[in-house]
Image (cartoon, rainbow, N blue to C red; front, side, top):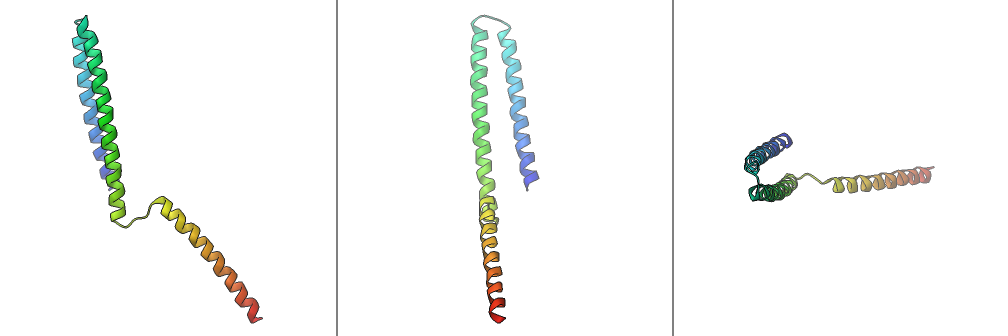
Length: 108
C-alpha cells in the first residue's frame, strides 16, 4: 500500500510541476513583450506558485491523515504506542524475574 501511495503522490507532483513549467513558459513569453505586462506576469507567476504550494501542502496533509486513519482502522499501533508497550514489557519481565528469584530463594 505504501508503494501505491508513493506512486500516487509522485503522479500528482509530476502533474503539478508540468503545469508550473507550462505556466512559467507562457509567462516568460508574455514578459518578453516588456513593460507592464512583464511585471504583471511576474506577479501572476508568484501568485500561482504560492497557490500551488498551498494546494500541495493541503493535499499532502490530507493524504497523511488518510493514511494514519487507514492504519488505525487496520489495527496497527503507532510508534509511540509500540514504544510504550516495549517499556511496559521490560518492566513486566523485570518483575517476573524478581518473582522467580524470590520463589527460588523461598524454596531453598
